[in-house]
Image: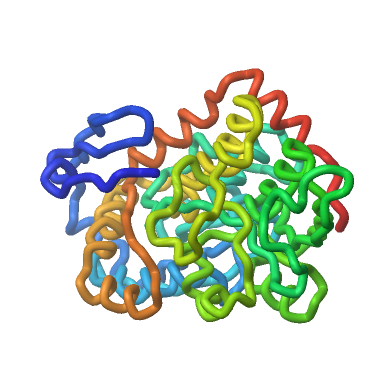
Length: 358
């Protein structure tokens, strides 16, 4: 779990990065505010969200978009454009290759698609190491959620050949699909995975209709979209994919990764395959080649917007949490992840290339 940086240290260019202690970030270079304002004045900045409307990514981006413009020199209009598909890989490809590299297009993509790059998936047409990172509003942890109608109340009921079977919805390229594949193959659980959904909003509809029994989703997203179902017991939480329990999870005694893993190898596979990539989950990026002064201005704008009292008040009403990472701190997380131990990478590659039903 990431600890919150102290404000004074952030002002000094320091942040707490998981596993590194206090790490110095490069001092921000100055930028020509007048030149940046001249460029942005009268223009529109587009946030391309890699998931469908109504999901957690979409809701965060729409709140941020409503407050970002006043912190960008020149005060351009800021709009949200949904481009769902393949766990945000379609949006990432678009931002990296096709979008203007002038600072008018920002991608909001899923950090876990870094796994697809790591395994050289043919759909990946970007390099996560080369995006210009602006911010992550909050690091997240995933939960295994099933509906009450399954009759399952404990994770161990899924284990082994005689375990009860549940059907889970998957979003290709995302933790919503990586997690059930890993839990199925690594922990020998009786999961059936139906792939091809474009966003968690679509999976929730499939749960309501009985098409699937559940899914893996974050607590930050679930309490925004489905808190009533969790409070009523209509949704049952069987596991949380994090090293330590989530502090504010309303469901008690939900097992964590160390509790469901039965070996150190299993723990590491779940950690690198599900937990660590979500430290930079709802990430905002610019394509490589974006002019440095505009990129710097946008990074500063994101940092200021996510401290804005009006934004935070709106976020609280919508049950959206903010505990942001900014710029270089995000890039360091991505770089460290791409350098994971070779044996873990090879085993993850083998497991996550298991065919999933479309």
